[in-house]
Image (cartoon, rainbow, N blue to C red; front, side):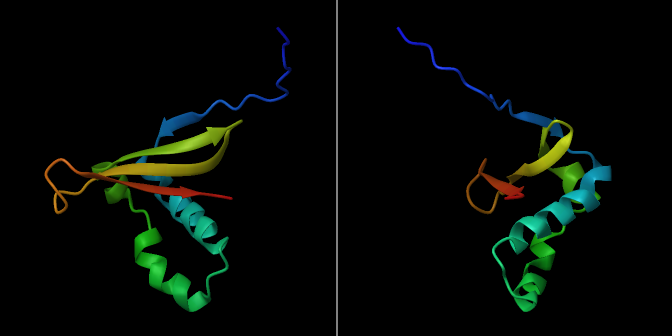
Length: 96
């Protein structure tokens, strides 16, 4: 049997988002969306969807992905009863 050396192992480290993270998560969401080179007009259309508030973080389960103390992304599980009872939607943003 031959062993293969793995130079780098990625451990996913998530921490719960706090209400104090709202402005940072908003900026992270905008940077991630801007990666795709949308026009300023279209980014303005996304503004409401990409804005993360302290109320949003308080009312939903949100997690921040960190590696070596630097945040790279986040996600939230949102209860969305309009779909079907017990349905959840995952909201995700990440810097590419």
